[in-house]
Length: 222
Ligand code: CA
Image 1 (cartoon, rainbow, N blue to C red):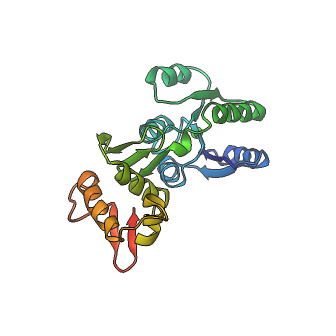
Image 2: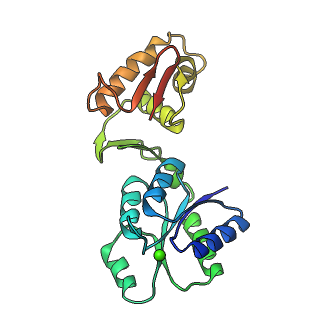
Image 3: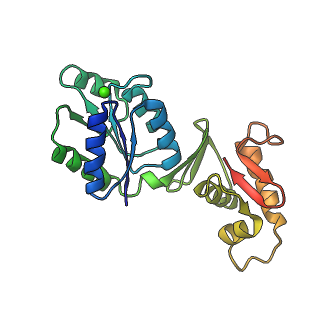
C-alpha cells in the first residue's frame, strides 16, 4: 500500500486530503509543519509527497529541495493561484508536479496516481540514514553528498543494515543475508567488513556515529 506524505498547515484541508487519500487505499502520513514533515520523509520513506508551498517555519519549497537532495520520491506541490506558480517553476525546487489552489480532490488524486505510475520503483530505491544515502538501483553510496566506493560485500552489508535501520542485527543474521546460508567462514567475517565499512562511511571510524556495535548482540545503523 503506497505511503503518501501530506503537508499542509490549513488543518481542515489537511484532514480532507488525508481522508480522501485513505479512502483511495493509501497509507497517509499527515503533517502541518515542515520540520516534522522532513522527519517523516526521512524515517518513513513515503512513496509520494504532497507539499503545500506556504508553510510556517520550514516552507514547502525548502522542504522540497531537502527531500529531493536525499531521495527520488515524487513530489507534488500545492501552490496558491498567481505569481507563486512562476516562482515554483523558476526556482527548480525539484518538484515533479504542482497543483494550483483551489483544486478539485479528484484532480489531486489523479496527480498522485500519475506520480506513482511514473516512478514505480524509485522511492524504495534510496535508503537514507542521517548524512548517509544508498541507492539500491545504481548501487552507489553517498556520505554528505560525496560518493564513496564500496566492495560488493560492503555494499550488501550496508544495504542490509539500512533496510533495518534502528534494529540490532546479529552476526548470524548478517551472514545469511550477505554471504548466504552456505557460507562456511565464521562470523568474524562480519566484524572485518564492519571495520572496512566504518573506514569509508564514518568521520571517525574508531568512534562511529552510524554503524554501532551492540555488545553481545550485533550491529545497528542509526
Ligand atoms: Ca499553507
